[in-house]
Length: 370
Image 1: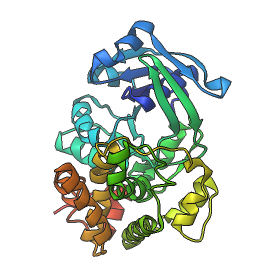
Image 2 (image 1 turned 90 degrees about the vertical axis):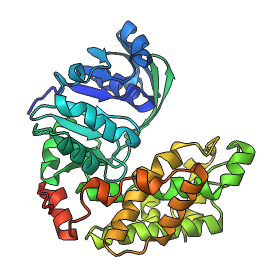
Image 3 (image 1 turned 90 degrees about the horizontal axis):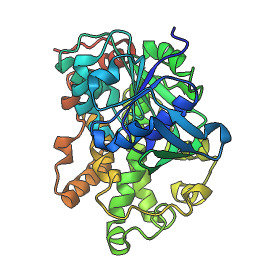
Image 4 (image 1 turned 45 degrees about the vertical axis):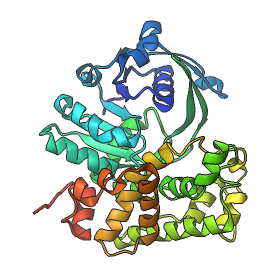
């Protein structure tokens, strides 16, 4: 295995800039790709990114080997391609990368949301990509970070344990071996159905925004999103959505974490129910609501997270009426058909698979389509 892999970071937003700078400061050769060159022109002129962080080891100037808007240049020398863009851009990105990928390269979606790796793999197949490439996805993004300027980024926190799974999962060890050279924080996430069905943002973000739509529009988000926005009634809706998610996972033989278990694991927070547990989480105090309903909590999390879970539920006979209600509310408020735009089993190319065949696909990479 390459002991000093070359990384390409795709996306120069809050997360991508932080990751590129941090990898460079760790001593790796890093290429930064962004589709709009003007957005990274200042980074190219400076030759890198200034990174700020509470930890002195994360601070400094991350010198980049290359800054580009060319897919060919971005993939030319990469061992591992780190995709740090909104999940709604994954399909277009796969189409752009398809002609340039080479045998042995690894593409990691940070994060995949739900069924991200499956979608990416299908687009590559549809584009005729013959390269033996491993697609992987993480359950969540490793950093809490933000962009501080055109060539500046800030890391607030690095998560200690982030599940990761490859498609197929028999390649998990290969991906972890390479990524651990830079990030020992990644752990085996099982398979990409597990990482996707443990996507807590799908449960919390859209419902909390939509059920507080009036408050968001009246105050422009000037209230505490989780503390004021979660009332006993809202929490009951979140619990219903969470039960549906866990039941969808169970229909595929997967044991998904409940929201209460996740709060305990991630924040060591407990409660008799979800309402109490959320209000017992000190980290949620002070987090403001989105200033508008035109926000990724709806336009990204509904089609890329909630729709695929609900679509899997419908395919395998699970009642997902709560999820369908939230999706339809989003459709009405945004005047958009998120069922049509989203990652349905039909669009993912897995509608004809039985649960056994689907598990075989995500485990061994064998796709038995009619």
